[in-house]
Length: 141
Image (cartoon, rainbow, N blue to C red; front, side, top):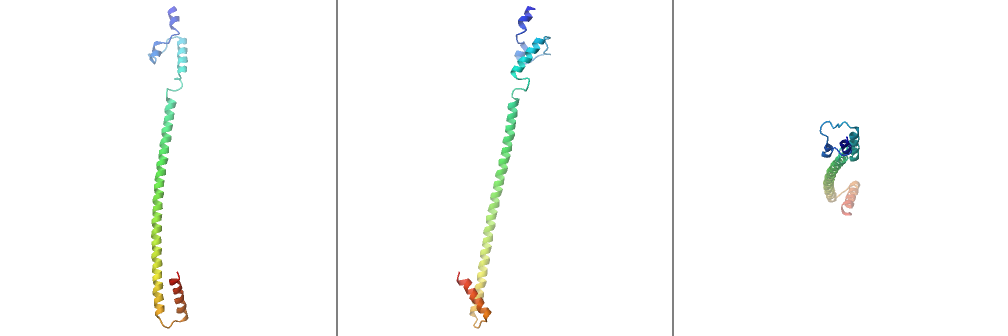
């Protein structure tokens, strides 16, 4: 009985090794209570070691992945908008060129009409008025 009193408060061999081999029951309530206390002090009864850290890392990875996805989509959006602006610039240049050609074509027609009217000797009032208007538009600008 004295041997039991000497050994009862010492940690068991299997708990020192890191786990219980067999049933883990020694038949003593005191040993179960001391096992529970020691496991609570270590904190292993609530969660395995590193669980919260692993969860935080997982959340961080998922946040990082989400941020990378948003950043990738933002870069794609910016590239799309840049392409759209380039196309608009090209369309504007094409439209300006068309407008310039149309203006030159109109000016050429006006000049042709002016030359035709100015070559005629007898003009009625309407033709005289048109000739004066063409002269102003062609030569006063």
